[in-house]
Image 1 (spheres, rainbow, N blue to C red):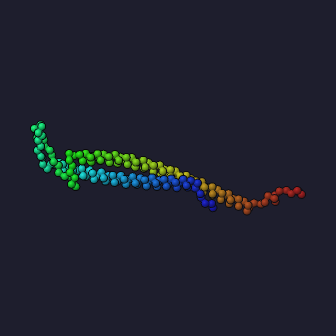
Image 2: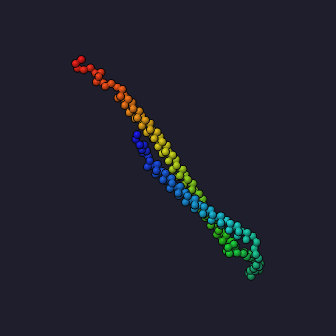
Image 3: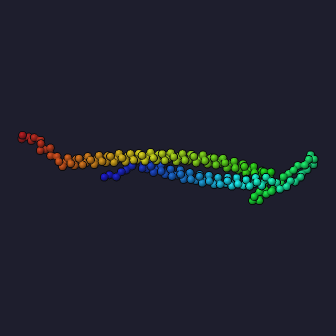
Length: 174
């Protein structure tokens, strides 16, 4: 019996390799996203700590402006956790800006993940189509093999049980 040879085997292997590569890229992006989410979480926690620190100022220092002759209370904030002093909330604003940048990056990574997942899905569909084609091709090949085997068997049986034609043909002598 002949061996089955699938004509699209190279294509199937290529598609499977492409799918594997897409999954690898997707894993790298998800890893980046996890690191980014962890960084965002740490920033949120730190901002919450700083917010709690800023709720109660340590003391109010009276400040008089000589030109306007009115008293301006300047609030002195204590050092935030980790020994970082935040003055006039400039650093908090900077952190919010950084958070916005991280959020935009997170959104772009999520979009990238969705596009990679779509690519992987397309590759899987292509692989399924090729495998269906392979199964159909194999079924047709198998059917053809059985047909050839049956034909050979019938021919063998016919040769075994048939009388040569030369016995029935009239001779010249009559």
